[in-house]
Length: 426
Ligand SMILES: Cc1cc2nc3c(=O)[nH]c(=O)nc-3n(C[C@H](O)[C@H](O)[C@H](O)COP(=O)(O)O)c2cc1C
Image 1 (tube, rainbow, N blue to C red):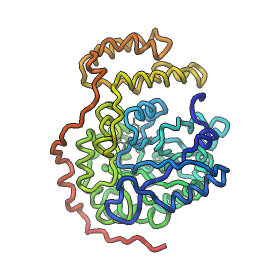
Image 2: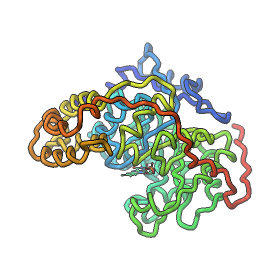
Image 3: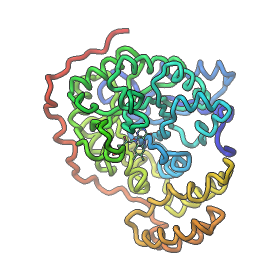
């Protein structure tokens, strides 16, 4: 797609992402830390590609990340999210390794992104080692900051018939091999996103066996834990994100039992107060999915200040939409077959005024405007008068943190004996 960074562009604009996490100590997600070894390896990577004079771009640690969500966290959404938060880590939708391998003529469509989207993580799906290796190799020049393997998707298309996604949790050896070939074909950190169990394989010890096997037999040191199990009994993926109960106690037990690994907590976290509450209890990083999509202003607007302690962008929703509109019109129809269309581009913005005055009227006007408007600019001009000026022009204020207790009782017995594990020496 024109306007998107192609592989060559990514290299020529000189982004050298540095994964800013030091392993090996508790509380290691401190800001501004740089993993020297990784940094050196990245320098070597760019030197190999004749990029000798690149300024180093350093990202803050993944204290907060936006979850990978198929059909949701596309380039458009990520562009909007980045306008609202400069520091949140953004995950792509899952891209199947198979797709990457079979679309070598068309890689930009699946892998290109704008450089502002750093820090950005590519999530891939698959279980065939040769495909995962090749897909990672093909994705590597796009300069993602981390490569993540999906071990949590319960969709029957993905997990059914022992395929990939969450079924991989039943094959820790294979995951370790997969992560080793992924790591061997890229020069950035690799991570796994998984559930806490599958069907009856839901004991804490089984989860520990999975983490232990994968982390000791591959370079994986970062796990994102969607803190509910998956049911492969035919319930829909949406129900699989609602019905199995959240068990944050499994997450906190992992923090206790694997002190040399990094764990990001995920599942059911909706507000910045909850993000900070999870971190107060020791979470290394917090990943937010649906709330970051459905209510982007409230879920992302305070990330930079309240999570990272960094200055706020100070943008109002009017200014965010002005910048987003310029992006939208620059990519409108550029993929061919009239895609992306106005609806594709406007869709991520539809949660921006959630629960604000005028939101209902704006949505009704949007339905009409989708049929008529030929530019993103005209879409917003026709519809935004539904929203009062003060809403469009207000900035988010950090309010004193409320006393969210969601995670306070999560350090309880998880039903198995304490798992004892030590990082193997290399
Ligand atoms: C529409 C949608 C698509 C999703 N697609 C993916 C995906 O591609 N890969 C993945 O690992 N998880 C996927 N998920 C799961 C989310 O990443 C996340 O784990 C889940 O929604 C729980 O987090 P939340 O309660 O903050 O939403 C998806 C979730 C939704 C709602």
